[in-house]
Length: 288
Image (cartoon, rainbow, N blue to C red):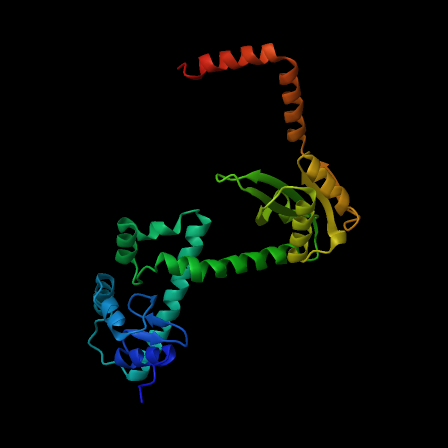
């Protein structure tokens, strides 16, 4: 009779017992305490490959250096310190992801040698992988930000702005921005709540996106007082349809968009003047 195949959970527990100071096992992941990253492995040879990497060796050397002391430590103390270090490392990684996201720094920059050298020199934590930042911490920050925005809008009168444009890949992207009315500290503040790629730009898609965002934000329909959009025909049609659901909402179109349309009309009506201005602009563009 053949030997039963070892489950992933049992394998992780076995690796934890084999290397108790280096790995920690959960139900679904084997975590390297030295490198502060999850290890993808289903066989012992894969674990050994990770242990032979330069990052793992340098992490062990750094932690041994910072942990050198002549005081004998009890086993229970070692266990508690390890748990505290894990919590501190997780908090450090989360703060790092938050700082990079707020500063609009791409996560892949964390792999740059200068960045790694800086953090490893001045902190006791190993830098997480780009995969860990994107798949573990960024979703947490996203959920926390949504919760914060919902708390800001809770039981408040709000204004909304909708705008649709194309990105670098020529996809139609619509953005939902809102602000709070009647609260002094919120004067002049606006918040981007959602962005969505549309398959087609029409009044039905815009109206559905607007209503979906309001429901997700948790604001009562009677507390939406103002909506600002451009003067595109599909935007006006969508807002006219939404008036039934949002009886107190007033729809405004952007004045800048209207002025732009006036300017386009003037340019079409005076083509010779437009050509003259265009040629003069071309001649003076490179003049120093």
